[in-house]
Length: 497
Image (cartoon, rainbow, N blue to C red; front, side):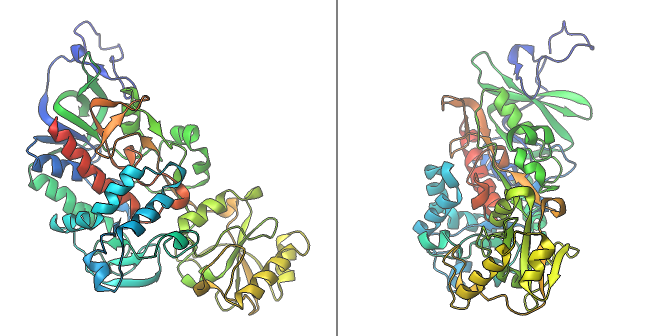
């Protein structure tokens, strides 16, 4: 801010335009590394930067640390190297190559092989590191299909590991490792421990502090950040680097409409309330490239009870379109893009239940025959009856040649009465968060449009585009695994200056 600027003039910087170093009136705070955001990525970046000997200041817009990870299930997706000690204790062997193959498939067309390889080879060591930071894991195994453990158990199947096509390429193993917490919401204990550890090793945390612009020198290297604390603008010098870890952009509906408009169909968001895209916007303003901005996690959680997995989804043509034993987020994406926004889950009397998350789900049709259900839904004559008849014929033989649903979940739908649960767009209560973000090296450096690092600028977590970058391949725990692991990488690299 120049001395010539009057109080009525807009400052010469914004989220989209860095402040020039010559416009800085004074340095109010000086440190080695600045971390923007005190969530999963930010806390781990702060820990590693401090342990590398750097002075660290963290600026968090909320009144406390934790970020969106605080509101999560607290699952970390790890494995490989033969398995974590929890996997091994319950008889699961998990090779690095299987984990690598699975993550490459989960990353979709834009999977980053270098990033995936680094994570696959070091995921077990990372899990051990999290334990050393004080994150508790009970060590027990919870079989079955769950959104999150309702218990305080650790190990669960949290993705597409056992579902086609993933199971054909990589040997399945449960890799969701959940922080010990009774009931849903284990992210609280995970983030309590990580934020406390960051402060314990000497990171200085500033709360109610909003980053409003980066600061660059004449060579366009990032040398600091402007923050607003208690209504006053403070100029913070970062001698070695700035780590952007301010979350994604799911609550910024203008950004969602611009980059990921399909996510607007989701009425709920996975966010602590501050995923406004500010970190991404600052990175873009400094010349950073953003990638996979159209990708998002979406789910229409239809289980538990897991008996509903034995039902079949059909669309307005009365046709199936997904193997229902896939991860609920993968199913969600297929549901969202069906023609006319019409989708129903067909169940019979034996497996009928109301989803735990949606106990008041609309029952769109009930009948003593599938023909009656078809007529009540207004589907083309014979379409649903043909689909169910063919499904039942193959299911009785333990097969699903059309969509490859695993035999465990195959059962003919023959016990009347029959019902159709509505997953039509008008009745959906879908949940989403964004996956796109700044293009970075695995070590955290933000890259420009030419693939060159921007000096002094780093990013991790959902501000960056990390391991999760394809909505159809997401697994629970992948975001926290990615954020904590690559937050550490960014913190270490930033500390080097």
